[in-house]
Image (cartoon, rainbow, N blue to C red; front, side, top):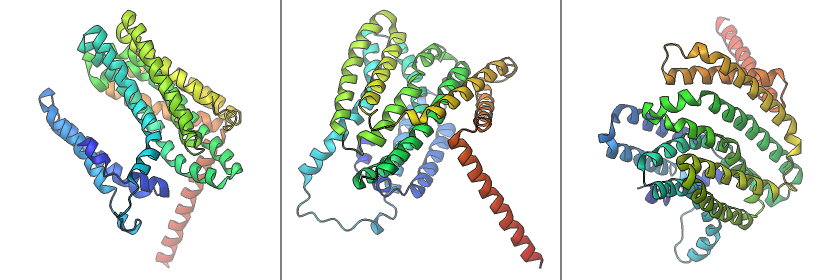
Length: 377
């Protein structure tokens, strides 16, 4: 069902037109229903088929919803000369990175199960990897937005805007990935067990080892979105991914033999580190990383302060509260502390958005007061 629905998904059109509003609203609606159904209908291992149907069904709904209003944007297709093989050839360069990102976690899990012949060990690793991937997906949300705009700017050769957008994208990435990494380390022992259950305590240490991927993987994806794809350096990116797959296979064969699931986690993190280094090395002439140095320092300092406060609060939170409750409270405290410190440091991006929304809020209050004055008169 998931393979079938990918042939009927028009999300790419909205990305190309940079019209994300309707798409986000529909996605939120479907994901909300998906979450409610899981909590209501999935109660144990016997509900496995229902879980599969809910997950696949939500993807089908997302695909169908992407066609709403599409007739106003797309002309009626003609079938006389579809240039099928030309499209397949041109789209193949996108297949390798997509397949690579899909295969990276599968390689570690499969080799772990094959070498150790223990499904429980594979399960611990898979759940730890799922948790880090969940956070990475949230950080990667900026990629789809940036790719369309950067492709347009490269096509029009607007070098000044390319430079500015690159800087903004990297700053935004730093402000999200650094606290996500430090926050995950801070609440990992509660969040992992609370999320998966007490049977997955073995996954806690694996999450610690996989947590650097929260910084490394989003950066490689971001560089693909703001440089490699828009500037048509696709094959260069593909060769890096092919090299990454080869390295991960070799690293897994070596580390798993000696360290089991811990070895798989180390191999996975080392692979992401290699990819990140290569992506930066081949793009540093075009992407100005130095201009985001100030944001990186302030984000790291704010993240460290947040981490210390969460560690100090740990003894108070861990009293008669469930792991999930501790995780939620720690998350709220962490966000408030991190944002407050950034504003105190007068970090460029966070200060801009803070004053932007503050002005909006004030203008709305003025509009309401004017409306009430008019009604009274």
